[in-house]
Amino acid sequence: MIGIAVAGVFGQWLGWRLRLPAIIPLLAIGALLGPIGGLIHPSAALGEVMRPAIGMAVAIIVFEGGLNLNLRELRSAGSGIVRLVSVALPLNWLLGTLAGHWVAGLSWPVAILVGAILVTHIFQRIVLGKVPRWKRFKGRAVLALRIGSSLISTALALLATPTNATAAPIYDAVSLQADLRFALDTIEHQHPNVRHSVTTAKLEHEGEKVRRQLDHPMNQAEAWTTLAQLNPVLADGHLFIGLPDWRGQSAELIRQGTGFFPFEVRLDAEGFPVITATLGGAATPLAGRRIVRIDGRDARAIARALLRRVHGDTPAFRKALLAQRWWLFFAKLYGTPGAYDLVLSGPGKQHVVAGHALPAILQRDADFDQLFACRIDADGTAQLTVASFVWEDKARYLRFTHDCFSRVKAVGASRLVIDVSANGGGDDDMWKDGILRYIATRPYKQGSTYLKRERTGSVTAGSIETPTQPVADDQLHFKGKVTVLIGPLTYSSAVLFSNVVRDYGFGSLAGTGGAARTRQSGGVQSVKLPNTGLVLSYPRFVLDPPSGSRGPTYLQPDHPPQ
Image 1 (cartoon, rainbow, N blue to C red):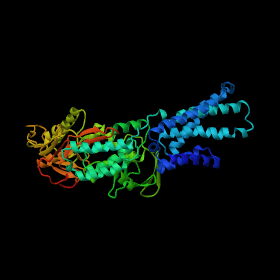
Image 2: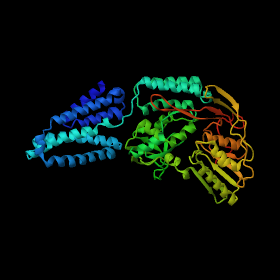
Image 3: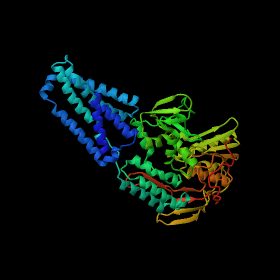
Image 4: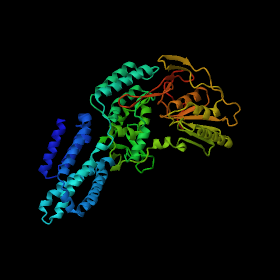
């Protein structure tokens, strides 16, 4: 509070000393101490008082503007007031907004806010402050300017204030720490065996480190960036603290004009993000260029900071997941500016406006043709791509796989490659009914032994007893060589499918492994943390592969990709 007051007084003095509108040094000082320097956090310092304080300040401005108005003078000023308010106000506001977005790189909502503030103060101080020295302005002209100033100041004070906007709730330290305790207790009492991925001692130790950081008020995004530091510790793609409806909320933000990081990326061996496409997947001549710095920050350090919040079994899995959702994690840690200053490998720098296209992963997950594909290559090899075992219209998916195997049968293909390298899992019936019915040669089980947390709270150890029978005399049954292509994002039900194919000899695995455990957790449940509304996901069972073996620990290919 003292720092904010001192900075405000200094800004006013600096404006007077340099003969500038006070709003200019105040904006500069606020940016340096707040978003840029991170030295002052008004929402944390003022907490719930911040919104009433803003409302009170606006009320004072409006009240002062009302005192300066004289209705008899207003009638005398005539049409000059109308032109001033209807033309000068929106034109200058528009120019200020465009400058804020395109020059300063602000998001559209913030640029609109800054444009309103600038119009109010600069018009009042620069134009009206010099009226007495403009001898040619007389009578009604001076009157029009003075009354116009009062109207503009009052109107824009109301327009500029965020009081009517939905502000992000602020949670105090007690509530934040209570959510942490709730998450840890839920994991302890609901997970079938937390030692599947982390020791209890390590989890409590890391939880205490996070608790010490929850010592000041935070909004939901700030709470997530702190609590999510447990995600790599939990080391399970089904066990993490996540964002509620991040897909839907991200799409809505884009519809409202918010931009995200402008490129889709991958992470190279040294940990630098490398451009693969523009946000949304469109081609760019910058593809293949390594990003060295982002807005003055080391890009590799940014990647490390983001990875400390990503969930998943292994560093390889987390690295692949971060690349897929870079735009999301970056926004939560570093915000959503209107533009980015990038230093890329090779010559030159890039000033790039934020991307407003729907990110590639959101497009893919909503597009059947991006998730599922079937083709026959010139050499007679059939390629079946299944990027998810989730699709609401299961009948459509089953028709697709039936048609694919009909094509395979018709051309007499001798080799089938099933690509699940980007498949994060879903419904087991999708691979049982849609794929294995055409390639299984004997009864199979999706796993062997398991541990399951019952609804009563007890943990049951058991084994899968009933096998799934292959479809007898199916005319589309494939009798050639089957290869399943895996990758760093092969997970959950896609791992179970891969385990079954290999353990029962229905085919072999190829591609990139070492990212997900062969012993998979599942039966995922989700619960909202009671205060922040963040989501804790946790599994109800842990299942061993059909072979019953705990080795290899991680899903590995039988041979490298060709």
